[in-house]
Length: 144
Image (cartoon, rainbow, N blue to C red; front, side, top):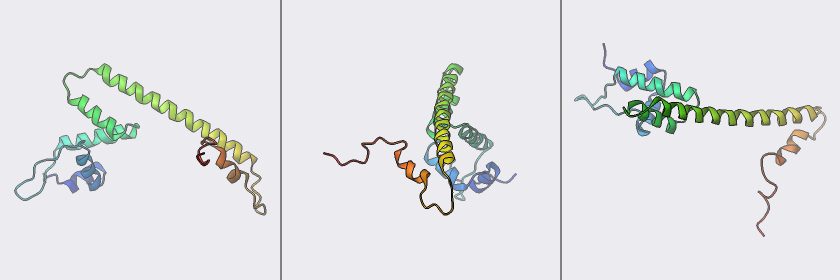
C-alpha cells in the first residue's frame, strides 16, 4: 500500500487538501511527523477522524463543538450522559433555527402574496417592505 500523503488522504476522504490543513490549524486533526523525505504520512485513524468531523458537521455541529466532542471521545472519564447532554443542546439549537426559518417563511409568503408582480408596475411591495423587518426602528436613527 502506498503511503497516505495529504493529497491521497484528501481524495480518500472527499475533501480538499486545504480542508485538512485547516483541520490541523484548528487542532481537530493531529499533524503527523515529517518523514526523512519531508512528507507527512497519514493513517487509517486520520481517515476515521476526518469522517467523524464531516459527520458531525453534517448534523450541524460547529468546528468548536466538534473539537469538544473529539476531546470527549478520547477522554476515558467521559460519560455517555455528557455526550447526550451536548446532543440535546444541539437539538434545542436546531429547534430554535427551525422556528426562525418558519417565521421567515411566513413573512416572505405574505409579502409574495401581496405583490402583484406586474411587469409594467415599477413599484414593488416586497422591496418597499423589507426595510421594516428584523431590525428595531431605532437602529438607523442618529444619536441625539
